[in-house]
Length: 603
Image (cartoon, rainbow, N blue to C red; front, side, top):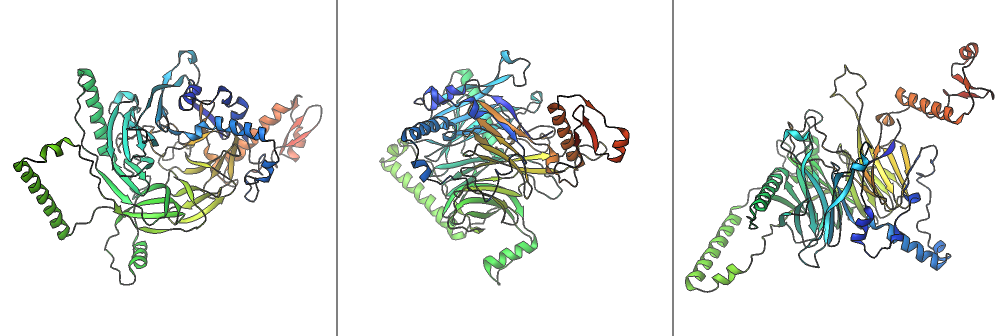
């Protein structure tokens, strides 16, 4: 089995979604089938594509001036009509049942519906729109972030499927609103007075080894200069309460709903970095005594005091400029306030209470203040110090994606590079050049249990980095961190790579057993209306010296190719000749052509 692209879902009519967001685009702008088809390229057949020192000519401006202006205008119109997918915000649920599009004020949510015409086929359902609307308080408020978050069901009859999917939308005004997949507003809260840049989530994952911390549910919201963390347990309780309240109000016909309590959250400000484009949460880590002493001496000097036990810290990794990659450490817990601050806060509360009581006694100002809506109270952010980073004055980071094992992070920058960073050591370990506007993702592959008597918990994992280069129209699969490129596919130049690094919200160490929290890890959304994922076998992560199975599969592949190409009848080799050279075991019939299957190939 080799690496291949397989379709996991299809849109019923993706052209209707395109016309909803961009009505001015004509029908001639639909991408053709030749541009959206995909074909497999082996590393030997396309070895020159991934050359580091190759110049791809993306910045060659004089060549474009020699062309006909009408041709340039036509090509520009064609590209603008085909890349509508890359202009939209897209979120695909990891359970592959809900897809959400958003652009400016508009949003479109699609769900899987069974198609009786496709009965018996591999994909017997289509993604059908269930909610299309223009949302926002006014025209100035636009959609800037989107996330589809499936909630785990509490019933045993669903076989591990999600109960329903919450569509979380971030706006330019700072509001975060949560809707059901049918468009019912469940929760709205203003957490910070800046534009919402990113919405990310971390769901429960059990520890793989003894001594490692488990990952808990958490919703992360990135603003321009701040990061907000909402605990997953309180979030799912609030969402379930709001959903039940909406169901009861719909059944009774009463539209008056109780306002849910505000969400409890933590907020940190990232003031020491000039610009933050993206971030990832690396989880809670506990430093060893040596790293604790090193950090204390670097921050506090020789006379710094060190605690007896290392504190637990939440690590945030950012990319942007000044520095290019930054590491922020938030110590778990909170510091006790100073007594003077407590006294000042109590005095302010007593003063406001006395003023409001006096105004009520004197009969002025009380009703007017009550009639006015109080603005939501915004809690101040806790400054988060920049521990260290990777400085690069000219380079500006765009996107950062964390690997499933939390050991590596892949970043893209303005120079067309993809850089792999070791999270634990804080070092850049690998760089790929020539990938302008690249999109990256991760796929973790588990080793097949070939030996039944072996403990199933003792398995190996392989990390593969997926790089999609839209300007070159190629999708590559690389073995992290120092491995080769194992596969490459020719795809459309107007696709979108989606990598949801989370599963279902609301699982724990008991309910997560035997449940597949996500259907795919990384998917490619094609403008023709197909969502594809990459199937990677584990033996591609093995070296040629230690992988007998990889060598056997390679020999079998060559044998099948030889039998398919040969039109003549094949006969077996003479036993005496086979004894002299055991590698020669097939002979072409009339032509007498000898084929050596044991001395060729990379294995």
